[in-house]
Length: 117
Image (cartoon, rainbow, N blue to C red; front, side, top):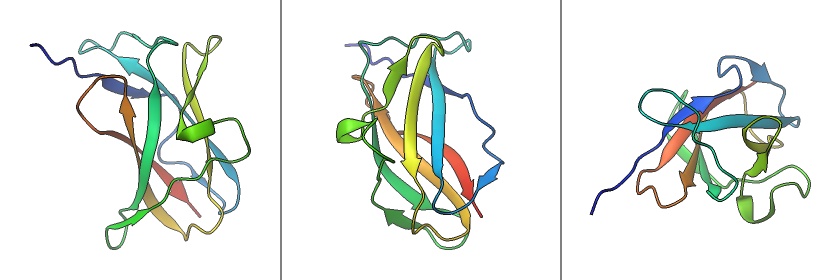
């Protein structure tokens, strides 16, 4: 069998920090090896965990902000051509974090970075 692995194209500035307590819209595309967008509403993208990486490595439970992401699933946005997850940052201390997620049948765990101030 052939396993297909997605590349991740972040659609937000991973170096920009948001205040703790603010909702952080994590926007991304699933891409092929050449960087072309292959996002599709039929591919489920699910947030699995957050990890503080700027000090010690600490896993934190993922929480969405509001009800836009049931079961921690990113929602597909047709206008964006990709996925959005409204991340709840309440209780997160200042630092750099990684949001981990799965994408469809891809066996790899993917991540993007974000910052909280």
